[in-house]
Image (cartoon, rainbow, N blue to C red; front, side):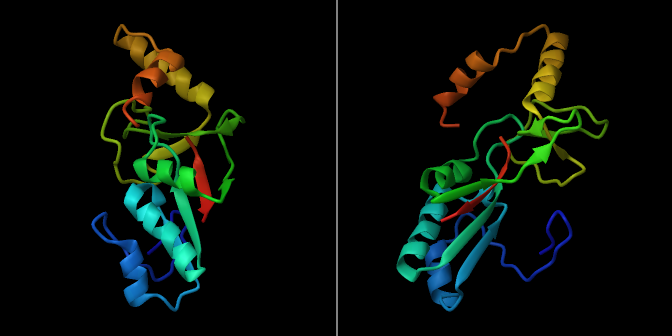
Length: 173
């Protein structure tokens, strides 16, 4: 597996159907640490399984990934990690304007920020870039104005909050 920054190491890819507790117990119980990249793709149940590994096997579990998607909505796995994590370290990013980047914006092939689409769209630096909320909000307002709509974060957030639905982070459980 190769990371976004080019580091390579042997890694196992697991899907949402894999019970991570059993996977660890049956094949990796001699490992003293578990490292999960792209942890936003974990299911909430898999996060609970990783938490159980830390308790039952006294093993460090380090998770790396995104807190929110390109529309600033939580990934279900990331949300569960935030609920269970004993330690969270945010990896600081800087927007092109110089402000702290807190949004993982998705871009089209022409460099335009996207505000519609599936929550998951695989891609690296060619599709995503960290930007600040001010730049993201400005672009969203411009996008909606072209469609004859307006954007207000408070009312938009309230509509998504009830659906159970922001930056990169490191979680240690």
